[in-house]
Amino acid sequence: MADEFIGSRVRLEYDDQNESFSAYLPVEGVVSRRCAATTGPDDWYLVDLTEPIDYQHQIGPHFQFKRLIIPRVLIRSRWSGMPLRRDTEPSVFLLLVANDQDVSTDPLDIAEFTHVCWARCHSLHAA
Image (cartoon, rainbow, N blue to C red; front, side, top):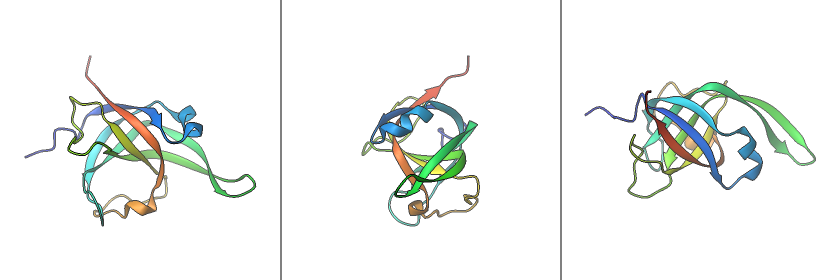
């Protein structure tokens, strides 16, 4: 059976856990595929963003930052037993997929991606 969430247009809004990242949200994109993980839950979804996020990621103390261009994000529902579907608006884990990170094959090592916050995922219906 095909995964109905793939192909959905979504809006991701800030929910909690990193107030400094809230300035980068909301963003919109299209769910391109479901991804398996090397460990843990295998219901991650890759979202191709309409506009990439230009993010200054802190990499060390004393204001050391690295500029990341984020064209995609990985999301997964935070709610146990509540999979991502077009008719739900759950809170999700939001992981950044930098421009130079490979997500072409499964399974993905989720630990390689930066978890920046929790977001609320809204499905956008065609007008």
